[in-house]
Image (cartoon, rainbow, N blue to C red):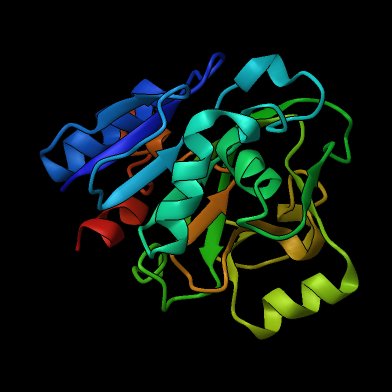
Length: 223
């Protein structure tokens, strides 16, 4: 599998993603510095988590103007699978590849803990394994928000990828860690080849880390 991981100043999950992809696919991804302007033929592009540009101005806003982003957008629109994780999700929203916004957690504090998510759309390559997955979150602005029209659009078009749930797969207020509308943990673009999610699947690919449920997202692309 030919894969690429974008690296920004302040990225701190890029190496975690690289290790996860190599463990699952057997092939190490190419790390792409944000000042590059091209990406070779690719089966998967990952925009990783972290604090790109120190989260100055607005999370993901400055990174969304980096030279490499034009190529990420071009590849995404051509159908290449793209995953944005945590800060990567914020960056993809800033590029308008994904709808809505990510605002401060309703607790107004940084949250770092294990949560559960449940696939809502099982037809995309990222969600077809259809398992309730345990993985960590670590964010301050992970509260998914959108207008009522946008929420209707992504629901009608089956663009909700994951919702926060409990260990039994029940979606309720108690399983929502950050106040996201309708417990939304991840969404897809119209064509279902771009995924943005706040939980960190790359931190949950082996049982020694507490869970290996994150592998299902990467395996979906591999298969």
